[in-house]
Image 1 (cartoon, rainbow, N blue to C red):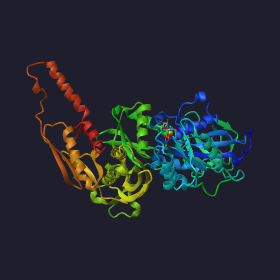
Image 2: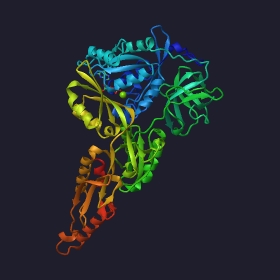
Image 3: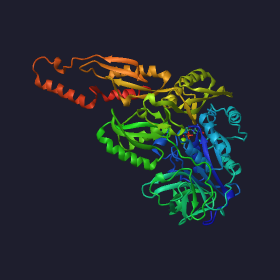
Image 4: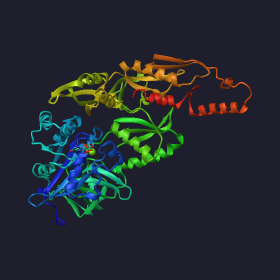
Amino acid sequence: MSAGGPPDPSRIRNFSIIAHIDHGKSTLADRLLERTGTVDPRKMSAQIMDSMELEKERGITIKAKAVRMLHTGPDGKEYILNLIDTPGHVDFSYEVSRALAACEGALLVVDATQGVEAQTLANADLAQALDLKLVPVINKIDLPSSDVEAVEEQIFEVLKILEDTVHISAKDGKGVDGVFQALRERIPPPRGSVDKPLAALVFDSLYDPYRGVVLYIRVVDGALKKGQKVRFYSKSEQILSVEEVGYLTPKQTPSDALYAGEVGYLVGGLKDIHEVRVGDTIMEVGRELPAALPGYKEAKCVVFAGVFPVNPADYGSLKKALEKLNLEDSSFNYQVETSQALGFGFRLGFLGLLHMDIVKERLQREFDLNLIVTSPNVVFRVQPKGAGPEDWLVLDNPAKFPHYGDIEAIEEPFVHVTIVLPVRFQEPVITLLKERRGVHRSIEYVSGERMIVRFDVPLSEIVLDFYDRLKSVSKGYASFDYQPAGYQTSDLVKLEILIHAEGVDALSQIVHKDKAYAMGKALCEKLKELIPRQGFEVAVQASVHGRIIARESIPAMRKDVLAKCYGGDITRKRKLLEKQKEGKRKAKLLGSVEIPQEAFLAVLKINQ
Ligand code: GDP
Ligand code: MG
């Protein structure tokens, strides 16, 4: 490649690999990197695109990344192949859509032994909506249980893709030449123009403690050069000076400029990752664009949970850890929360359940914190009595709900759920969906004795162990994906727990009316087990709208720890008294009742 000057756009291919988890995306990426000599084979570790420890463990890609490969075609000429990686999980579907928006095409990898799964469908839908050229690739043809024909039929039938399929084994490399051929011949080259004003799409960002924020960008039109002054479309008051641009090979390799059609990175002196929004457009100062590149949206947190240190003295360390982690992952948010029961902590917002798990694990692993995480809840919309349409309250914490007498209506978020499963598991899967208040949308039977089931389900029913239950009732054969489907009114109530006639906020939950009784009963029974006897009888009650729906009582105890000590062994007596004091310190005194921390924890987990 000659240095300087824009590359010939007809020699550029920007593409992504999309697949259901475990269908071979990372393995195929490794083969492409290897064949193009992008990575020294001696330095090649398996699954090079998944660099975080957690990513490798879970087999998912958390952050989108990009790599530029040089490939020599049969005519001896060089092609620039930009592989833009996407996070492979629904929680990050906005990031997936921005990464795809930076591409002209995608390789859709389907496992020849599994066929089309829920994430294959979701990813293909996203790519088709963005008008990407899809090249279907059937992988793992080396396995004896592969059934290429059935999978081919599914791709045609379910995804309506009429393209020829490429058959490969990403593991042993068979057929991978056909992938390169498809990239050259089937994926269109970028269409932008170097002469137009600069328009670049930010598809990801990364925080580097030494260099500040690094933006991953696709230049759509114009050129981005060192020394240029640029600004974001959404925050036009802020001006950045381009300190460095370059390619990802995969390491950052500086170049003089990035031209229309190219993919690379930009360092512009930004120190705070919160100033960058994925999906934003970069334009040149003085040649501003009349409109942003399409599709920009703010990623919203949909799942919330309280996070508290087990040891209250760790509050400061938790705060520092959150600040630090948030520099790298700006998509979760946090605010201080005080709980009657769990003390000082934070309420965190996440893009989804997996995102929550990742943040939780990183806090525990990378910062060595011992944490209590409450059961997750969604964001409710509450209409106060007599309030207008603009005065709805948006609540992410059940404890903040107004008194039931002041509530006109409650709305909760729903999702479109897509499940792909073998027909033999139809019954238990549909039963599960109905238990979770799911509303039927469609059922489609496809080849290979499989079916696609679509339901609308409240998100709150998904955040509690839905995935585990689905896996269990389908013996691991059902795959699942979901998309936000807006808010709907539901018959929701606040289930309150009273201990010795006193309401305990940390134990209150928002539940569907039909489930309140069973849940209230279960909570009372559990608490009865866990709260030690007091010197008086203690009532444990569940109430909805001021009406008691369940009740247990903990009988009084004659509280005499020394009763067991006959005779005068004073040291033993002292020990017992000290032990009792210790127990008191761990427990929370609510009104006149001590509630041990385990009681709160057990209750927070009761619905999981
Ligand atoms: P990803 O989740 O889509 O990134 O999938 P991976 O690339 O991590 O592959 C999942 C598993 O399938 C790994 O254990 C791979 O070694 C294996 N695998 C990937 N491609 C092939 C293939 O062509 N043949 C066989 N036999 N195994 C494969
Ligand atoms: Mg992978």
